[in-house]
Image 1: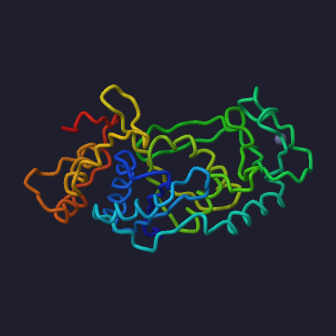
Image 2: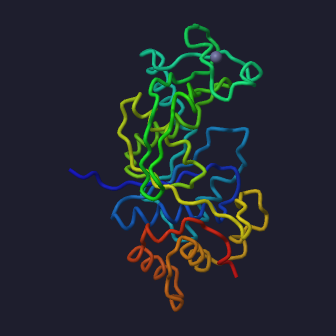
Length: 287
Ligand SMILES: [Zn+2]
């Protein structure tokens, strides 16, 4: 039986919604709506030092104003620490993960973890996942299939941080499973997280969603646009114009006579074509 489609948009509360993250939101929203599925919002707030106060509420409010309403209450990773701890404990108990007491300084000259603590038992808090699979294939709904030499290029990676916070990879995997996400739509900046997450799902015995990575938004010179750019075009635009721009950047071509946000969404849901997303998203479109 086919599982009902469930997608999500999962921003970190480290600033305002910007044009680059809006593209991920719109693409994930349209995928869900076109599949007559559900679309959820998850705030990835497990890194308090990086968080900006008020940002989570601002992002949710902006999405609503832009016509994107989640089908369930917004979820917050900071509320789920107990679940992440449970996952880490089960991996430690089964020997699939181990505690690591190496300092940053000790690992300075090792791009891939050298395995120093694989046999030690220490009580220091960082926990690494034992990477036992040499090779992993990642299938993407939009990008080329990629092979990752997991053990050689990535190595035993951190799933619980030494400062006693869950690592990003672990939290995402546990939540995607808990929320029954069937497809993850996100930016290509997270593409290299996918082999880690697939491997972690395997170790935890969790179902694996499909993955679709959309190209990163760049300026005319091919430079990645980031939250740090104060001149984000989103600040200047009304909701209708913002969504029209997002659709154009994603290679969709809404008729110019649509002058109402609801009608624009209606058109977008009916005409959304993933395969029209260009291989490069550039702001050349911005007038
Ligand atoms: Zn170590």
